[in-house]
Image 1 (tube, rainbow, N blue to C red):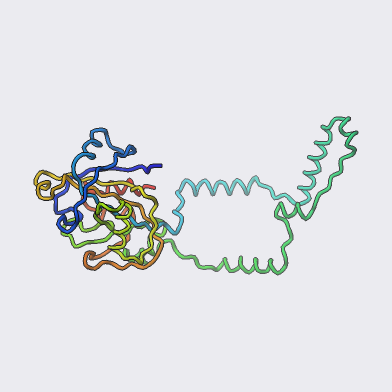
Image 2: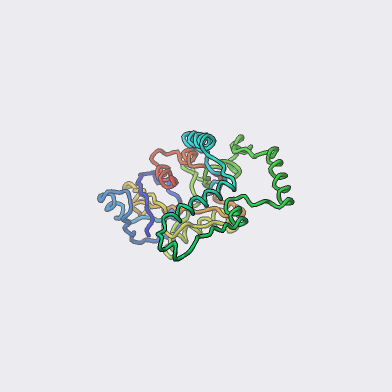
Length: 309
């Protein structure tokens, strides 16, 4: 199955290009026409024409470690449900359940035809007490195990619970992962660029590898081989298209560039930043990405679609 892709276009100065043309080998390939996009037919024709430089970027995600806070409507419903259970529910005893089974069996016996009843004889009801008590959760607990359960319940009464908002959240230190525990965090790196320095780990396609291999290489080159990640698939989650003006086309030899973004899951490991190319890094939530990708016409619009689910 093909992944659904979001495609947006922009026009940026050449100084905002993700990498220097002179330092990267040139490779050209015909773009595959994807059918699952949010483009019009005219936009597809424009995007699929011309000579573009290709890049692949890895959007490394630390998934939430806590469940999100329940919305108010769910809390209200759950409290009403508990009140309803307290008012109208009933705890049946073992004797009540046995009497109910006997009544059902007696009612079934009355519906039998006389011929069938005569042929089969009187129906006797036998109830396995130990099995029935086990099925309804009334099996007597071993005394030793019961003492362990009582001790555990007593300890829970005084057990301190860790807050959802941590001390790292209070100081807003974005170098740490122990923050925003109920949200996803995405790794962004700051390169030595004058404009738009914040990016996801990115590398240029060399023409010999797949786009996923390019994205994997970007992770290794920017943050080291000790950083363990898992790619969700071979297809990118989305891509960003930039068209150059005439001056930029003459200077670069390209009509623009395209960045293919891959969703990547953080598995662990240690980060070793490439100090020659990277100045800083941060773990940003989806809501905070606008602080790093400040251009209103930039790819942050694409990221808001990509990270919606």
